[in-house]
Amino acid sequence: MFTGIVETIGEIISLQKEQDNLHITLKSDFTNELRIDQSVAHNGVCLTVVAIEEDLFTVTAIKETLQKTNLGDFQVGDAVNLERAMKLGDRLDGHMVQGHVDQTAICKQVSETEGSWLFSFEYDPALGNVTIEKGSITVNGVSLTVVNSKKGGFSVAIIPYTFENTNFKKLQKGSRVNLEFDMIGKYLKRLSENYL
Image 1: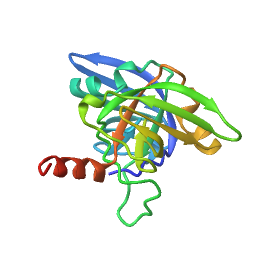
Image 2: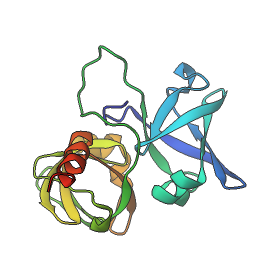
Image 3: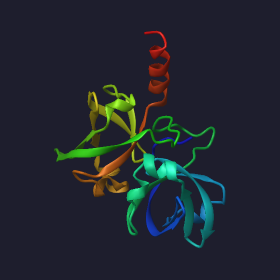
């Protein structure tokens, strides 16, 4: 379980294909605190640490993960939003995030406003996911509040701190991002489908 509050930005050092799997090695400033078998969210995707060497750690993404997320788009040198799993008893500063990406979206517009940025995204509504105005959404692992909610699209406002401390500063029109929709909303939608 995660909160969607990015701790640090990691850098991809190497990508190694092995059959349908992709081994991703990253450099991060919290590697020395990690241990093998620990869960870390990478752009919102929960992956298990399988190797640690000095300030580098390695995780493995399987075929299903590569098909449902933007991890298959990774290139050496890319910046990745990283968050370690939350501890019981900690404050929940974002919202409840599982690290299970529902689908990807495409950035359609980036607008700089007076002191912040507005990012607009479109996603395939055929998969049944929905947003609501002022509801929660996780974009590349960042817990955000939805604005301009519509079928198959929404926007988020990014404050300067989030812009500087996540990979939002690298996103541009056409970038593909990972989405995890609000967990409570997904359960309510599923339950209501059985009664309508």
